[in-house]
Image (tube, rainbow, N blue to C red; front, side, top):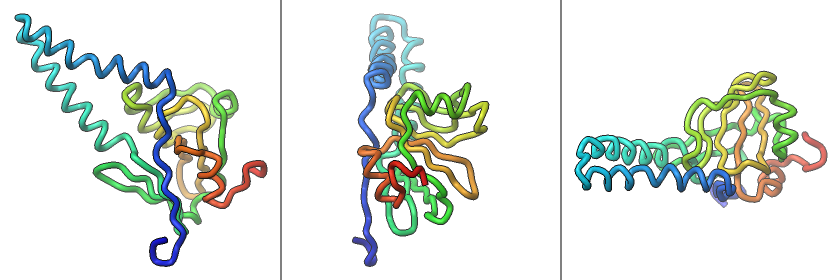
Length: 174
């Protein structure tokens, strides 16, 4: 409890096998470039250094570490920043499976980071426009509909418990 209010922390969900595979593949690039530089292709050292800096930036700025549900709403926590979604601005929070999400949003394009520890940034969808997206899985998403802003798509651990902590019934959708 903080200031007499019940607080629940939800770590970001573990990566799904697809995202884990993409992450391992992408993380292998800097060492491969360093090996190439050490074997005489010195020009590969600069791209390796650039990727390392880029990966650190993604980890610190784009990939959330946890979602905190409290009486005032949700705090999204990254290593270098926080963002609040006020409770009065949340009209619906519900767990959505991949198939249902695709049916609801239509064709979508990611704008931001994708493949390195998850998908972070924006999702442009033909049926929903821009959606804030911070996902590490390819299933069991939490869809947060906002009164005064764009919807959010996130993947906290224990998505059902996360939705209940916000005060939304799993079967009611509201």
